[in-house]
Amino acid sequence: MTLQQMEYIVAVDKYRHFAKAAESCGIAQSTLSSMIQKLELELDVTIFDRNSHPVKPTAVGREILTRARKLLFNAAQVRELVAMRKGESIGAVSLGIVSTVAPYLLPKMLKFLSGNYPDIRVHVEEGRVSALVSQLERGDIDVALMATPVGNGELLEIPVYRERLLAYVAPGEPIYRQEVLRVGNLPAESVWMLREGYCPNNGVFPFCERRGSDRAVYEAGSVETLIKIVDENGGYAIIPELHVPLLKESQQRNVRALCDPEPTREIALVVHRNFVRERLLNVLAEAVKTIIPSEMVDERLKKFSIKL
Image (cartoon, rainbow, N blue to C red; front, side, top):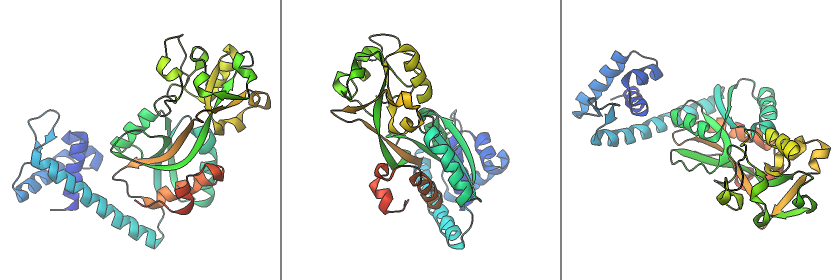
């Protein structure tokens, strides 16, 4: 029984297809199948039901896979520990970032990493939360920066910072005359919403329940587009606090605080529960902390390093 065999059966369980699993492991399908058969013979059990389409583990196979993942996790932790002690380079990282966070963090993050950790090779994927979650599940990206919670038991969420949500109001709107807006009094009929808005995580907004009942809304894909829509068409939108410095001075006069309650969103580093690269997470957290105002940074992250 070898760690390599553990990697192979975990790959088959992930892809539920021997050819795809072999491709992900960088070996021929015949080699992968042979190694798994040897393991089954050694243990005298059948790990996968090969008559099922897609292939699926047997009952005992599921138990073996659970322990195989733990073995691989512990082995990866040992490698990470040794690499850290040797001062080896962190290497390549595939970073996912949600589009409502990227404009504020990504440019300065890349500058910080290139200046302080030039050996790190960063590949960035910008996308929607749902797409990034799927990529994390498949192992297509290493880590993602996104609004949480995402409600996925396979993923680990490490809070990094919390920011307020504000209203961007067109001057022609009746609520424009108020300096602070009560969340419960926001008019549902004139709101413009993001494609992936704030309703799933912040049910305090009245338009969440009434959404679609008053008029058709265009769900923009970025905060910048959302603001342009308000400028041209009136109404209002909910925007994150960190977008305000990116607005022109004339646009900043259109921003209103919200209260009763004050809505916020949490941004976290999200990884698969099998992820072991602690050094990488701490480097990324360090980068974010140099960008985000200190009062927004998660208190635990201010005091402690990330431990998996």
